[in-house]
Amino acid sequence: MLLGRTANGLYWMNRYIERAENMARLLDAGLRMALTRTASSAEEWNSVVVSAGCDVAFRNRHPEVSATAVADFLLRDVTNPSSVLASIETARGNARMVRTALTRETWESINEAWMAMRRVLARPVDERDLPSVLDTIKRETAQIRGTFHGTMLRNEIFDFAQLGTFIERADNTARILDVKYYVLLPSIHWVGSSLDNYQWESILRSVSAHRSYRWVYEADYRPTNIAEYLILDARMPRSLAFCYRNLADSLRYLEEAYGIRHACHDTLAATTAKLKGATIKQIFDSGLHEFLTAFIQDNNRLGDEVARSYRFY
Image 1 (cartoon, helix red, strand yellow):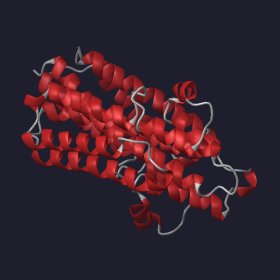
Image 2: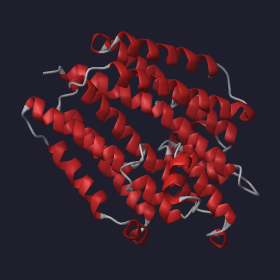
Image 3: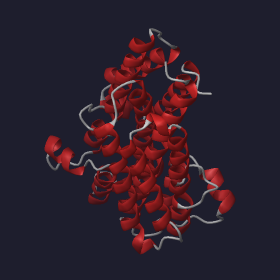
């Protein structure tokens, strides 16, 4: 049986690698939607900070909301534990702690990503350079993931790492969707307009789902279709349903390996049942924001129960 301390290191290593990428994606969503604004884009950037779950910490550091301030706080500010720079630093620290559980290639890819991100985030990012910096972050984290999947043995080490990845990814997809509905639109009159459609299309691009969405729905950018794709379509790698299918696999393998079923298994089963039993019409009728808020809470509870069940200390 894997030591709880090692399982903890693997779990959080992968959560923070995923978080670094996800923070870049969240900023990308905010940037794309801010570009559609005809007036001030401050509300879009405020929605990004709120959806990242660090609005109080941000306001303690910055009196005004702006693209520059939000980008600096979410990318470079090490007092923000969820910033890209802080996340990759924490991920590398956890990787070093569990170094003997990783392949050489995985450790080297994490170390190289850490060096690359320290280099591009060494100074404040000019707004004009933000797209290229975000692309660098997404590329470096993708290389870690590719190396990990290509070289790691499929055992409990792999499963604890997967739990960290998909709990974090599910949280992020829900938050990116919430960026859209936290602020909604400049006016209710924009609903169904070309601006509304462009903002939804921007959400797809921020999670690298634009091309695959068109394969499924052609060019029909309906809010209900896009939300259904990112919540309920288990074929889409960043959807909530896809994340929970992978979480179910990893927890099932751990149950078989250790011969013990924990509370986290029941929590996962309950959340999976909600996803499988819901239609997108029911979700919209009851409130997309409310659904996403409840999902984020359930997902956080799952993470806490995994830590307790497998003694992450």
